Amino acid sequence: ERNQMKKLPSKIKIGGMDYKVLYPYEFEDDSSVSTGLHEAGTNLIKISEYEDGIKRHPHKILETFIHEIVHAVDFVYVKYELSEKFVTIFSKGLTGVLLNNNLKLSERGYQLVKKVKIGGYEYKVIYPYKFRDTGSFLTSDLNNATFIIRIAKEDFDSTYIKANLLYCVSVGIFSTYFFNSVEDEYEDCEINWKSFSQGLFQVIVDNKLEKLFDDWRVR
Image (cartoon, rainbow, N blue to C red):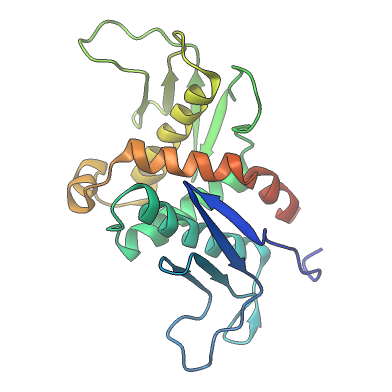
């Protein structure tokens, strides 16, 4: 299964933009880029099948694909200010989540998964959860001390609820894979976590990336 070249989508929609995906793409030998590139001005995402002349594992290709998608989400939904360090580490975490879980983000209905694996941890998802009146409109949260994700139902649309799940997962990825606290990195990069995770949700759902990961998964 590893020897058969799998396909990436030729186009993906990110916000109101259509990106063309060039895969497999061969970078020039003297290029500083060897595995992947996001070109904001031309709406291109280029992904190589090889690195230093060696054919890469399918999961590494997926990681590069997610890496360039994160750059694109940053460009379209945020401020295009995320550091390369952030994008590299976060993409590794998100690739792992998509390979190790079926979050069922594209499925209709209000049913959520009961557990989510993030790195070496397993988070319990409590849904529907009734938040006490804290004076703020709290609809979800994640606790890294107890490995619990809580999601409110209220009268929300099911897609909003699943977007909230991905928001918590995104924060969980960050707190798991980064040495600094989420708050410190938030200040450093000025990340709007809601906008960022909403962008990821749109890309994953509209482009059926969970199915893509299932097709590419090496069992």
